[in-house]
Image (cartoon, rainbow, N blue to C red; front, top):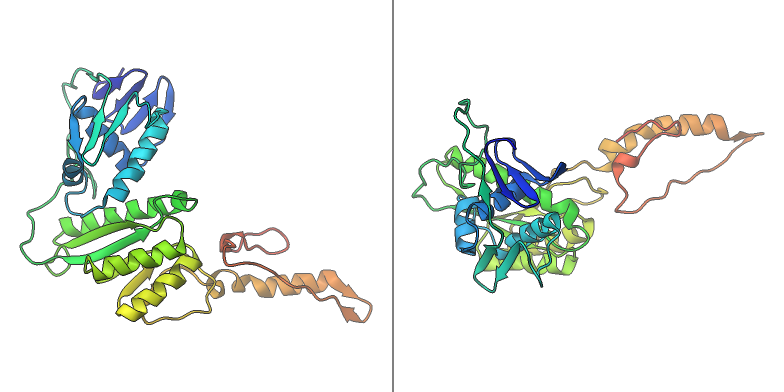
Amino acid sequence: MSPGSLVFHPFRLDIDNQEFWRGDHAIALRPKTFAFLLYLSRHPRRLVTKRELLTNLWADVSVSDDLLRSYIREIRAALGDDARTPRYLATVARRGYKFLPEVVTSPPEEHRPSSVPPPGALAVDGRPASTARSTRPPIKVGVLHSLTGMMSASETPVVDATLFAIEEVNRNGGVRGRPIEAYVADGQSDERVFAREAERLIAENGVATLFGCWTSASRKTVRDVVESRDGLLFYPVQFEGMEQSPNIVYTGAAPNRQILPCRPVDIRILAQQAILPGRLRHRVFLGGERDDPRRGSDPRGRNCG
């Protein structure tokens, strides 16, 4: 067992290498999920309130309970735990969580090589290596993605990346001296919920900008909200194009940047293969809004995404 580890049978948290083990089997965890589990395991057998978690893991970001629940679900899945009959992690209704097993700390390492932590590195308790807080009013933004439902596997990592970027900006003085304050909401993989949550973030939380959506269906419902409220949406993924809104920043590629560059190659090769006596056989390409542009390839199998 290497120094710098926390052990609760049969699991081990390797703090030095940021790894989670069950015996000799490594269990993959996202960095923030690892920090979440690390904080709980450092405070076993006592109530860890939601406010305590938010303060220590998201020091520069306002995070909703929806996001906490998504991390708890991921941790329980990694532990093989059951919320109804917990062996490792119990929920204390409306208050927080309690880490149940006894945790053994391995002997501390005598010498740790000093190094400058990378951007976004966490201090001992998971708190960002933050500078002094600004006294100027914050810039409020909303982070609206699916934390539950079928799209959560794709969208939850985008939430992590967005919050990581916001924390990094705040550590470097914010935007013109003003910190960014983020409010996270769960779209629940339902475009109707996306529209409702977008309305709430703008009307109740007073956010100026939204970072969110994944599917085109969710984007289109949120588009109606930001246009009516004169808000701004940063949309992070590729989409089908044929849409333009002054209230949306489309950061992903449209077909003319991914698929269309391949079409001259497609047409030339298909023409060579499909010529009949005096006629050219017609071919049609079909697809839907959820088709991944990375799958677009020419007839010889070369990926054009």
